[in-house]
Image (tube, rainbow, N blue to C red; front, side, top):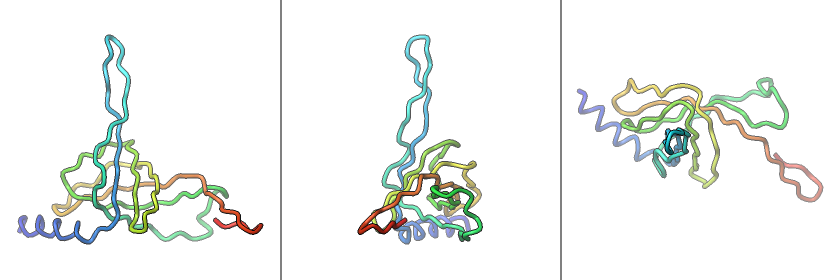
Length: 132
């Protein structure tokens, strides 16, 4: 049975068109001083982002583009809390997410990671009309 779920995990990744770059922090010792350095955990890793519905009443602050998503990604990747996640969607648009919790690794076929998109909303202005 477990083998069937592992095979399902391989089939799932073929259906994921988003790509993840995940960076995390690693301690680096320089003499007696320890600091942290950002390192790439995975890059160009197939994944799937699922966004919860967003109602206008959920908007807390104007000028922000914040919402919760779940990232589905293969098992075997250790994603520490506090990682930065950059997702390139199927249309080539890159969004930055911050972690909001530990990955749920209870599935054999994949793991789920709760993320928060938290970037300033960008406006485009053309012909005197603003577009968000």
